Image (cartoon, rainbow, N blue to C red; front, side, top):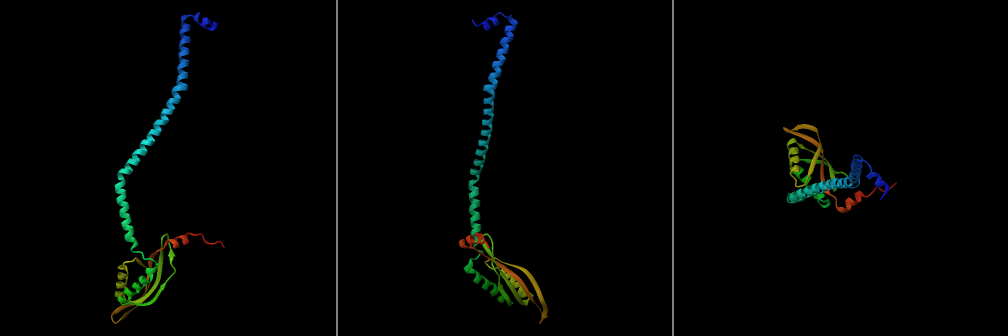
Length: 202
């Protein structure tokens, strides 16, 4: 028999019990340190991962449940976009639109003194088309002109309105008005691509 074991067996009972308790404590500590703690840590990590997956499932379920409503909203936006597109002319329609502006002005009883299209201002997918306008006529005719422009099927904004040479002619208040009429047109794909090209180096 191993001398160490014989030595332990010859010890008093109390010491044997203490040694046995110590051995059990050491084994329990080893089991906790090498087996239980790593598994506990792994389990905690799996619980966190499970919670994340459950949150993702809930979010995707919510999106899936809302899909018919989102599709309906998307279709409605497409309808509204198509409607908006009809209010912006392309480059071929600009001359006829400008002609329409002068026509409604003349029909309102105004005389055109200046009608000068300015350089276009490109934006993301459209361009502003500004026109300097100076007309003369009565206040009533000017008001009718602005109302008629607002009623055109295409978008035309009137800004920078200034009145001058106000006078009474045959009991009619006559004036000269300068303003900026701005309409808009779509840029075609080539124009958008060209606009995005970097400027040549000098």
